[in-house]
Each structure stands twice: as C-alpha cells, then as structure tokens.
Length: 215
Image (cartoon, rainbow, N blue to C red; front, top):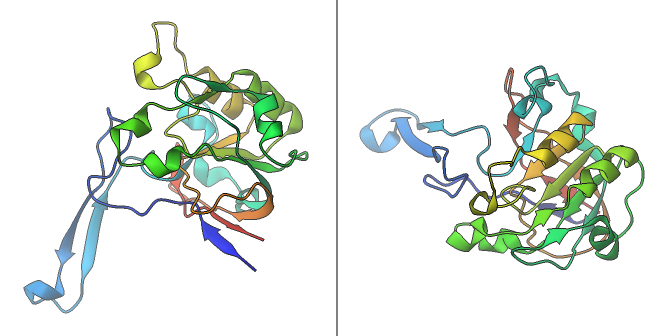
C-alpha cells in the first residue's frame, strides 16, 4: 500500500490569504528554559494551510465542520490533472480529460501544479474553477472537491465589484465540501482512498486537516 499526505507542513509566518493573520507559534513551556516539558501555543485562522471549508463559511445558517460524521471524510476519490495556467478557468471537460471520471459520491482532487508554488508570490496568481463545475459536482453528489489552490475562486486581484464567492456558494450550498491548499508530492491521475478528517472545531467554518490518500 502507498500512502501520501497532501497537506502542507505548518510553519510560523506561512503563506495564506493575504487579508488574514498567518500562523504564530511560541513555547509556553520549554525544556531549554528549564521547564520539565515542552508545550507550544499556536494561533492561526481556520482557513490557514490545508483545510476543509464547511457551509457555515458562506451561509449564516450553514452546517459547521464539527457537525459532519467522520465517515464523510473517508472514502473513494479520484485525482485529476487538468491542463491550466494563471488566467484560465478549469471546466468540467478539463477535469474529465485530466483523470478518471468521478463516480457518484466520490471526492474529487484537482492537481494543477500550483501547490509547488506555495510560499512564493506566484501562488496567489492561480487558475480558478468554472462556475459550471459547482452544478456538475452537485448533480454527481460529490462529497468534496479539493485542489492545490488557495481558493477555487478567481484570484483576489482579478475580482470586480460583482464578485460574490459564487463557487463557494454553489458547492457548499449543495453540501459539496471544499479542501484548499493541497499539495501533490507525486502526480498520479488515478482512483484512491482518501482519509481527511478535519479538526472538529466547535462551530467551525473550516477545519485543518492532514489530507491523506492511499492505494
């Protein structure tokens, strides 16, 4: 069996959504200072690093991350590697051309190559998903769509006054969860089993996760 983590390591000051705070970490107890044990204190937004968005991220009455059963985050998934670049939108046809066709209820993991740019300013200038992907995912009742992007939406610098997080609303409104900031250490367009339980933050609009795939 092969197992891979698709999650970024947490590092103080790591890249994230520019308008949000970054990760901060220090020691409240430290053996180097003469304490008997070492204990860290970590502060971070819920949407930092590799995480899964819950409907409450975009809907006032949306379901929170801790309200989902564990089995929702464990199951079959497909990896697709669509051809894309900054300024392009990834369509359903692109996804289907990039890997196995998802089955009803699958998780879909989209590898764009942007995960390798994480930490560099170029990571913020990324492709996005076409809005039609949300309707298609809802029809297939996909459990989750994950991607190696900061967001499935347009990059912040390309949004106009009409921008309203339509992809988030379309996906989360259909109970298709969103995993952001994945990284693919190996590129294999294939069917896998995903194990991606998030931290069950009470009332959480998202949950950090060590997103693991195996085959």
